[in-house]
Image: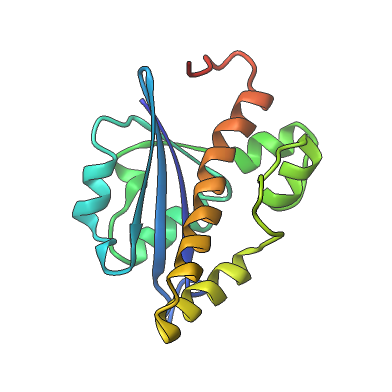
Length: 167
């Protein structure tokens, strides 16, 4: 079973940085489920629970960021347990360079009503949520993360047409 994973953080690995959101979309047979862990709910046990039954995790730049970050904090090395497919390299083989949002634009993938946002905006939304208890900021952060994980699936289907599409 396949899962699509993306994290939001307070910065880069090291120092006081930590993951703020772990989003996982799972392609269960006949069912598409998106789970998101937030803040203190991000634990090795909660991540393992969400990924139960998964064999392969798909990310974008997860080899360099998402998976090493989660191995550092909260201390779960998913590279030891799951096959990993980094779609950034699939994109590069297809001649697509740049970050996830740029590649989505090139491929014509729409983020619906989401404003143009970046990883830095995700950090600012988390700060606004913490400092002001701003639920709207958290909701937008979760929507942004959800689009990330769902669009990983879409990118995979566009670039790997032999992959069986969910129904």
